[in-house]
Length: 490
Image (cartoon, rainbow, N blue to C red; front, side):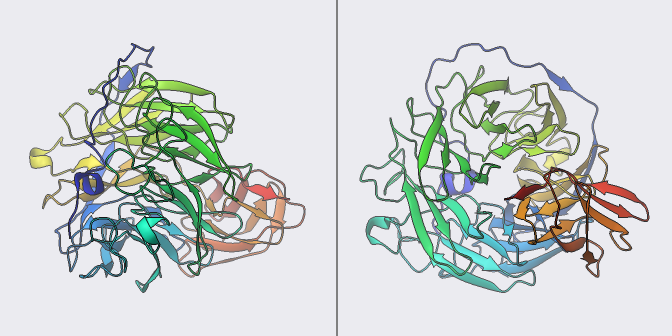
């Protein structure tokens, strides 16, 4: 299958030429090496180029690879926290079921996973390798193609979904396509349009909500997924377009009304190709791949109304070119990865940054001979055991990428899926060693519950009298609190 640097590399799309002012960057602090473990090295038969992971209700981690597998078109896999990997599905040739997935999966409320494949499907697309697909897959590996893009003339329904999906509180899934849509003007390197925002029902009915118009209007070429905020709207980024053609931050209502919140000008970053995370303080935090004081990318925060603050400019030694979303951990700090840079050359880094902007480099990749520890990290997830897990796009024993674990001493916690619901609605609580749980409370309101057989998840309903706040689970070994406040919907 034909693949381009954009579809595989995420990076090196070209650093934009603009004048960069020297900004007041936060000081980067280097710490001694953390507890780092390479859990698994891919060998191509089980995948190549893994993407970010998601923790499931059974306690395992699930992910995709952009290449490799039985036909070379990528895979879906699961891996235990201790490192046992199982290939669940290999995308086929011809790629009518999709190919080249570049994003994380999302586990929906009913337990199945949903994802996107950047290529393939039953429609030819711009270059006759398919416009991409939306699929669902069971935890056991049964895959169903829900939608093939470019079903409309000139890909008016969108093309090349590079980002993953988010399930909104209404039960539908929302996502973006890199190009396609109703715009008649191509964006940078795009053939059909400037990309779209879409929603799709769990059964596969797709609605195009918005088509981006590129430069100098509302942005274009979104490579990142969306996040639903506490106000119900969805927030995201475009890698191009806007006032200076350096990308934008936008919000979109579930019905499709788009508001551009910020246009990057280079000095405050450029090319925001990662999604946003809404912090417990209500603001959003994100990264830009390039731009900033040293043209190596930035970390920023932005208020829901659009006031942006550059928190840190990478200079290469502390990392360069972050393209993965940040994770707010249980200690309130943010953790992330840079694709390049670090103390070992261009292997990339894992870092943490406080909400105020103090950055600490936790690990620089390619610290081992022949980069056996991996190279080019592709994002993090915090497991409910407190540790971080992530993939590297390359390196490892066979050179095809790895899955690693990084422990920084954070305590176990519980995670709620979804993070907001109405009274009476079902929610799942993810955790470790939940067997024998004594009580579950929603900001003090007691709830009835059941624990699954593996002791990794609790099923409950939001109790009457519940209010927005922390969920606590009392177990024989102690009390576990939720990593973020649970929001009770009206």
